[in-house]
Image 1 (cartoon, rainbow, N blue to C red):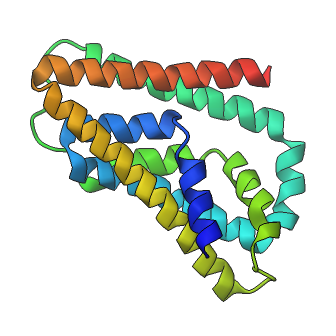
Image 2 (cartoon, helix red, strand yellow):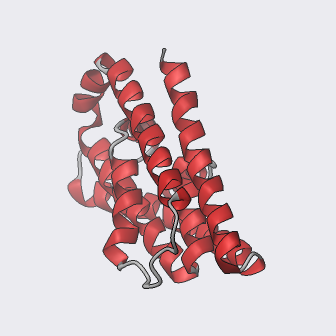
Length: 197
């Protein structure tokens, strides 16, 4: 079980678009909000880990055969999401003061993580090191351990964002962090598109 936890930490510890989104949410709205966003990614990781541990051998050939389309689609999704975030920050007028509902913090990271099925490939590649053996119970326990590792890293990103947000208070700081987050997500999309082509 500790292997699954450590693997979750390693996979989630990579600074990518999801980490930036969690970091930006924490910077704008604090640790609690950033943690809710992080758990969106954690839930997607759990679902993919569970699927990989149970069905990886059946699903992998389909994903491998459609990798180009999946990579391009994910890259375009990141570029679109980053552009949408930037446009929202550059619109004139003050942003709404009310905090966003938890579901609106959870869903973006869940969807961005879940809409990249290559995560399943990464998790499925880890299966031979685990004592899954087709057991639903063991697969669920190991998927939870992996999700716990992912959660530890996600909350860490949220905490780092919250610390930066406190260091850069006010509307200008919030906008700067949001624009930097949007630019980073867009850049990851461009990088992914170039790599796919």
